[in-house]
Image (cartoon, rainbow, N blue to C red):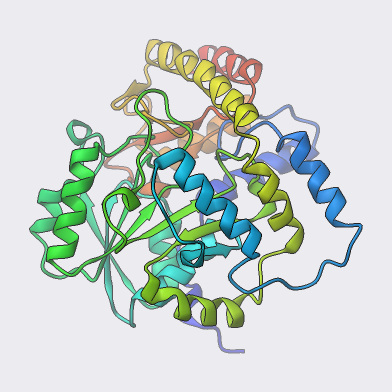
Length: 377
């Protein structure tokens, strides 16, 4: 059978590492998971109870772009947390942010469009774009810029149909300063570049609060998710806020690609929006884990170029040990049972050796990982 070229994309390497880590656990090994970007805590109990309660009734299809009650609650969330008014009609519920990326790209771009992003980047961006027939354009960044692209860099390009920003970013946790975000929005508007703002780590910051791009413009697609701050990774539910002109096309694509987001997850998400006191406690736990790695890893030779402003990742330079992040991560996993993510997954290969540590898990596990590393590096 002939196979489409759309599948000729790179692996999402963190998932390969997770598969290997799970296989070792199945053999009886004690693996410390610092690879996956998912909270170590479960969704709050009230969310679990809401999901169980939803099973007492009929779980049929919902509206393709989400239950009106959930969309209204998300609109209220924007008013309460950002002081931004968003009409519920502009909110599109998606099967995780991953489906949100697919819907956004299909809605915005025709085949062969060029979409820019900073380097390093979240691996799914270029992989999804390539599978859909689009071209990724990578703009280099450095530690002086906190690995974030500037408006000035975007302004030099005349070949972009779209641009991705993420703040806080994966893998670095770096945030775009508000004044720079405003400039990026202005440059993209001037050059007719469609802007997509990845905001899935909002709510997880350690200083300044992350500000949504919707504060400054309606002419943007803002992508968010219940996976990170709301601790609902496996529930596969996210949302978009889109310009009013895109509602119809989003609805038609959602109908045909997904029919609707799982009803149980939507019911649970409504309750999750009311659990911010508990969820802020989770963020406080990440804030305790963060300095443990920030303090100890440099002592072992891991250089941290940019301390994270948000999310729950440390992007560390391993050039003191290796110029091959993939081999280094698999050796670490196989030899001492510490799972991390190779920097090559984020566009940095042998000439720029980095790996990513996730500190979203339990404090004791991270402390034990440090002890194992002390005897290994």
